[in-house]
Image (cartoon, rainbow, N blue to C red; front, side, top):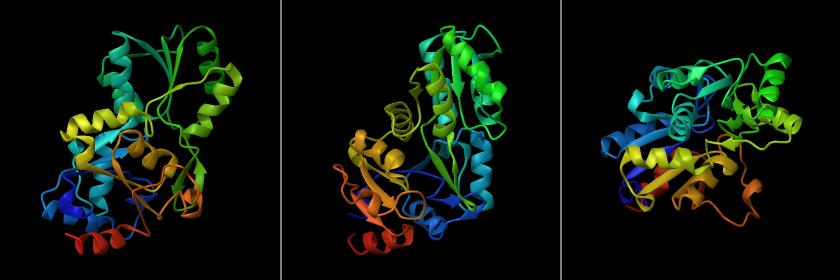
Length: 262
């Protein structure tokens, strides 16, 4: 397989394009190659903290070409899920500005009480009181949603607690399992395929996390490329039942090997 045998690419961000504020080697060149070959691509991120515009700006500042239209966030997918389930929904939100904007732009009311839904996204200002309110609203009957189940996120400091870790506190407290929206769930992948306008067999899913990125692709019948630049290691997937289609040290290695096969 090579670049030209895939009509589109779905690409993870954290651990694939960058670690925190550091661009990963080969990321810019990989996107440049897609642009030169006029191959469409979307960035799919489980991170709900930033808006699509902010994510695009971060990539642009790193020299990676991106616009808002290239970005699919778990925040946007979550807002779409809620509005599809219930019109004029009321949501208690434990998250940051990216999710807040996505919910508000969808006409969803943010509330502190009598919530129809509790939605948890990554929150770096988490507090005991936020966890308590979320738990109480769920016990009163609110539907429990989490943007993603990432246990940890790769940063320039190392692996730090992810939204899945925060979500688990509320889940353990209430005894209620959340509805997850982000990778590896089907909700965000269906949205990405609808946007890019291609069938599963025509695209490649690229990411560093086997449990989220690669399993998302496998579940959606999409070929997968796992790069060893972030969360998962080669040893992590040595004995898993469903193997990635390809495993490469980085995107530079993928470009070299794939171009020789075109």
